[in-house]
Length: 263
Image (tube, rainbow, N blue to C red):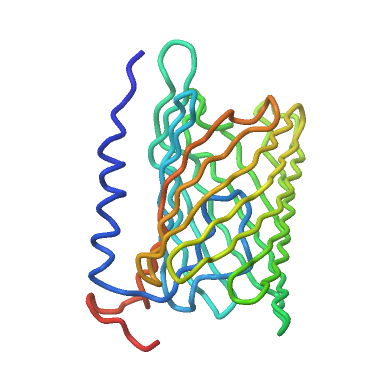
């Protein structure tokens, strides 16, 4: 069984941080590599890229990328896609472009005690090739409620619930999906941090529960690298998934290269 080479994509990911040192943006708001997201949003007027690679022990591969824009002090617009995917299956593996996701995340409330609430709405457009096993071929709508609590300046806890109306390939109408997640993270200093998440996703005939453990390293405030591993806890979950990636804030839109602008 022949697999497409993934080395070029991996090398490109390693080279991006070197390019990022040419220009510093605003402090990043990483949402990867967990399933849930917190209440932080991209700094107003700036763009942020989340890019990564994920490889399962079974040989599946994806390259999830998300481009985010701070549309307001508490509002973020985003578009995400995995441009290259490999899905293990009998015979030839499924290879190709993933589904496109677009959406908005908004922080509704934040208090002086570190408690905040946000909502997230996203739509999946079926751009992946269904015949290659890369997607359902149907659109999905996902709506999430998020609560976050910061403890001091180093520790954060997140509670996440998401309802999904998934397109049914059989034409039987929407399939209900419910996802729950609890996540926590701790920054040891201005560089190093650790995080963990327990997530469970339920839909018709599927029970996917897994835990994710990851570490982060801040090259600079505008560039954070991450690496983690997700372990499945149910039969429907991926056994092991290895992840590596980064979050990079480019700074204000239209800013000239090499200039940091006002802080």
